[in-house]
Length: 74
Image 1 (cartoon, helix red, strand yellow):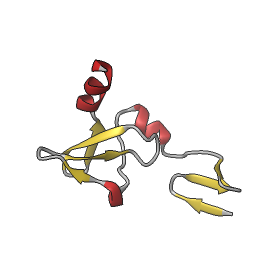
Image 2 (cartoon, one colour):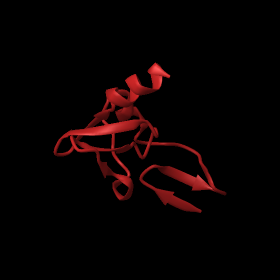
Image 3 (cartoon, helix red, strand yellow):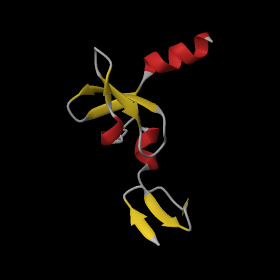
C-alpha cells in the first residue's frame, strides 16, 4: 500500500483524491518534473485532475485556456 498527496493507492488504483476539490475552484498543482516553458509561461498538467494548466504568477496555476481553444478548433 502506498499513500501520497494525491490520495490512497491500493493495488495500483487511487481510491480517493483529497485535493481534487481545489481543482474545482481552478487552483491546480503541477507535476513539477514535467513542466515545460512554452516561450510565454510554464505549462504542464495538474497532478490531481490531469487537465492542462498554465502558471500565471509564482505559485498560481490555472486551467490552460489556450489548450482548451486549440482542442476545440480540431
